[in-house]
Image (tube, rainbow, N blue to C red):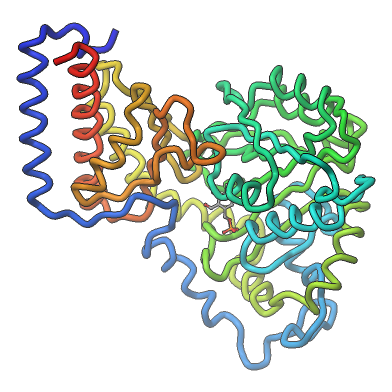
Amino acid sequence: MNELKSMNDVTLQEYYTGLSHAYENVQAQKLKLDMSRGKPCTDQLDLSVDLLDCLSKTDYKATDGTDCRNYGGMDGIPEAKKLFSWMLEAKPEEVIIGGNSSLNMMHDLLSRAMLHGLPESEFPWCKLPRVKFLCPSPGYDRHFAICQHLGIEMIMINYLDDGPDMDQVEKLVAADSAIKGIWCVPKYSNPTGITYSDAVVKRLAAMPTKAPDFYIFWDNAYVVHHLTNTPDQLLDILKTCTTAGHPDRVFEFSSTSKISFPGSGIAMLASSAKNISWLKKQLNIQTIGPDKLNQLRHVRFFKDQAGIEAHMIRHAAIIKPKFDLVLEILESELGGKNIASWSNPQGGYFINLDTLPGCAQKIVAKAAAAGVMLTPAGATYPYGKDPKDKNIRLSPTFPPLSELKQAMELVVLCVKLVSAEQELANRGL
Ligand SMILES: Cc1ncc(COP(=O)(O)O)c(C=O)c1O
């Protein structure tokens, strides 16, 4: 039972009045803080500042002799493919290095699917009466935005503790040929922080699907973004699909957006040899080659796997105290009240806050009215509609600690205030 329910009417009204006064006091401070997006902070960007001058006037050639200043190199220079293939647990020949955005690669792949179909498709998806995608939720709002933009119907899938509800997924994909894919953020998921269990990965790889052209969009955006020194382990999806007899089922994505620079990092994609060869033909129509100087820069700067891993430890040293602060404030202000629950992620960029049903939108609006921007409530669900209106995504990385403290003190105040308001309304007071 939540603590509000145990208060009598008078106590509840007094409690609410106290919270309202506290809220008015914060409003008077005219805060202007932003916790809305998972962006690295300036200190994190500064970790990679040597990327800006680690090439020289004479250092522009790749190991295979490619002049990185020129056209060509469609799938990436060999040393970049080698450096980043370990992140995707793929062979270098199963990897394509793209521009600076993996979201761009996902968008392009889905657009190609609509226009031309994917390798196993009989028809371009736009020729079909309906195309559907499974969307484990809460999930990444920009995945859902791509589907909505392309007219792909989204089916919400619930999350369990170890990944999407696989009973739900298996039942749906076995019965409906219009279901062409599933979005997965399998490690330190945005926003839940969940890492998929081995059982979930195996079931995704093995499940029979009615559509022959069903694909897993495996967005491994947070693959090396650990907050502890005991990283979550995620099964290798490419190998698991191959073992299960579906070697061509998955397209895996990642990028260095939150390793080096979000504005000028390196995006990458891995898939089976068959899918890669198909995609390279498509890419040849789209571009005469990616930014290979940026690829070379990243290779010079990080050098090898150990270089990236050491760099990620430096990131964690900057952002872990921010996660800790948010968790401390949640625990000290909301712990034991049963009016909210939250995740304790071991990596990634987000803390997932669940409020009482029907409260999230009001909380986000109240925070905004007092100067703190949060991710819009509902954004973590298909069509922007959280069926229970209870999920709020908290992004602790960008604000400095002092601002984060102010922002979180307001957030927990808004959670208490709106929850009390709702309890008063429930009692007709
Ligand atoms: C799950 C997920 N995928 C992709 C992205 C964006 O990736 P990129 O910067 O490579 O386009 C983000 C950014 O927040 C993300 O959370």
